[in-house]
Image (cartoon, rainbow, N blue to C red; front, side):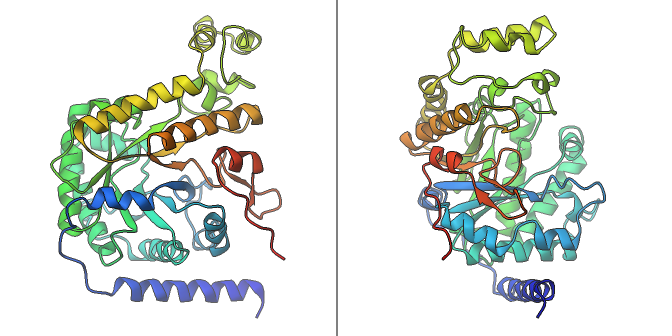
Length: 389
C-alpha cells in the first residue's frame, strides 16, 4: 500500500478501536478514599500536546487531515521513549460545544478525540483531558450565568462519555487558565463544574485550579472544594520577563526583548534595558535584575504552594512551565527549566512541561520529523532515546 493510504487505514482502525473501547459499561462507583494521592504516581513527568486539538494556527479551522497528521503514533512513542509518563491533551471546546444543547457533543469531532486518547493510552501514557478554551469562551463564563450552566451540561456529558476508561490513567481538567478576575465567582463556577463532572464520572480524578492565569498565587487563594478526589494544579512562568521574552501576546513590550539573562543580577540586565523604548518597561527590566532570580528564588516561590498544600492536605501538580525559545539564550533557557524542574521534584510535585513541539517545545521539526532537543532534555532530567538501528 502507498504510505498515505496505509496511514488512513491505520487511523480508521484506531477510530474503530476507540469506538469499541468506549462501548464498555460505564464505571458508576466512586473512587476509593485517597485515590487522587495514589494516582499522582501517573503524573510525575509530562508534556503538553498544545497544538493538536487547540491553538490551531490555520484560520480555516480544524480539519480531518490535520487531526491525522499533527501528532502521530510515532510522536507518542517518542514521548514515551523520552521518559515522559503522561501527556496533557489540550482541547478547544468550541468545535464540540452546541449553544443551548451543550450536552449534545458533536460526534465527528469527539470521534477524533476518542482516537487520540486511545493512541495515548496504547503507548502506556496517562492523559489529562484539559479544556483549553479561548478568551471569548472564558469571558462568557465570567459574565453569563446561563453559559456556566451550559458548560456544566457539556462537562457532564463529556465525563460520562469517557467514564468507561481506566480512571487511574484518565484525568479531567476543568479549564485551563480561567482568566476570571473575580476569584470568588470562579470558586463558585468550579464547584458547580466539579459536581457536574462527578455526576458523569463518579470515579475519575478531577484537576482544578485557581482563577485568572492558574499562577501559584491564584492557587494559594483557594480553599479546597468539597470533593476528596481532586488534584490542584498551578502554572509556573515566573518571571514572565524572562520566560516570555520575544512573545507577541499579552504584554506588548515582551516582543522587544531578546537575550534576557537568567539568573538575573543588577549588572547583567544593564545591556538589555535599551531594548524597550518605554521608561516603565525599562524599570521592569531593572527590577528583574534587582530581584536576583535564581534557583533559590524559584524554590522559594514553589515552597509557598507546598506550604498551602500541606496546610490543606491536598495533592498538587504543576502542569505548565517553560520558556519561549524564540529569543532566549539556549543555555539560560535550559538553566531556568532545570531549576524549576529540580525545585518541583525536590518537593515531590509532578509536572508537565509546556510544550511538545510548539514555540516552547522539547522537540524541533527541522524537516517535518520530531527531533528531541538535547539541551532541553538534559534540563528536564530525561534521557535521549536511542537512535533506531
